[in-house]
Length: 448
Image (cartoon, rainbow, N blue to C red; front, side):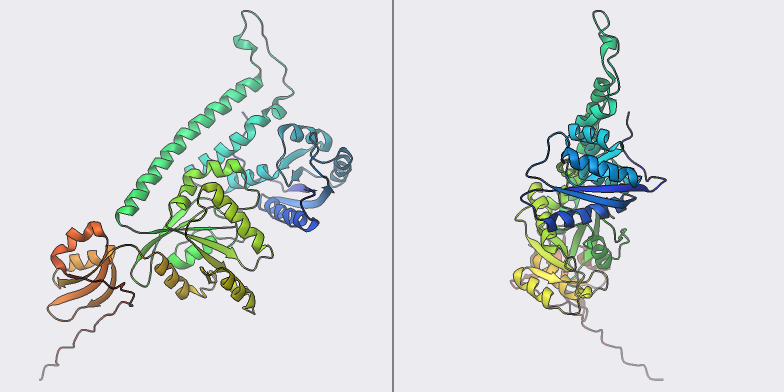
């Protein structure tokens, strides 16, 4: 069988990039896409030694680009000792096979490159299963190119068992493996559902962090929660999802879920394979769309993320636009323009922490859960009850003076019975005041 989960190459591969300028594309768009493809190639461990483009109405069915251009690029690749040629669009199995004959080296498309990066970054068993599934689904129609040199084995009457080609055998093995991984990922989905139901018992709202790859999602999660999720200035630095609890200044618990970054031309098979992970996006009460405001293609990145969200079925979900990396701007005019254009937005710097208080206030306002706003009176000696109240409720005011401690808090409806003995009144206000603590009166000093 062909190895599916790749490992970092011992030797740096020399890479040549090829882009096709369709009639609907501009030269600028093609160059931007090739620049991103170059970043992807570097992330995968390659070094780009050249690029080539061609302008066509539609791709050539046999070789994607014209035969003349393919031969021209092949000569250049030979002079540059190129190991791998990467096309910026997805190639059909026949096109890949024909191009490898022309270039006499390995030919990949954008989808294969992204899958390779994901394979390198997968750390958890779940992530590895999802990547393997996507790779197998991508590989299945392309097996012919790997086994084209094999001839049919014995066949005929009385020898049907040995009459299979190696290609047919491998196809069956790949299909069996796809079914097995699908069953294992279904178990993962059920486990995630159980975890989600456990969170819902506490009525902790879930905010899912989404955005273009390398927009600063993991850095934002680390800054807000104090976690140590890997955050590097690379595409797809973080692959495996992470969920952390965030306690807002209003004493409200919120769950933040960091997801895999999105990208233009994200392979459909990859989205399908990661649905077990990306279900968190669909189930979230609020999406935090992190945008790298310093990127020159910020508009295209916003559009790409919205396209993937639409594919996931999360379009139209309440979203807070988080314009990140505002520390890179000396003038805030651009930030002001985007904040006016997107009313439900905030500007932050995940790296420096600038804008963090405003962001937390906005997050708390948008995730305010439906809870009972009540006044409670709890004896000081019932310390366990007081601790429990702080753990599961949103305490807005507290006063420890007198014989009992008095609180104004929002509690989940299903915990009403647990605190019923201490509830003195139900309040109608929204309770947005900051927590207020009354100082304990000092005991009079004893006289000698």
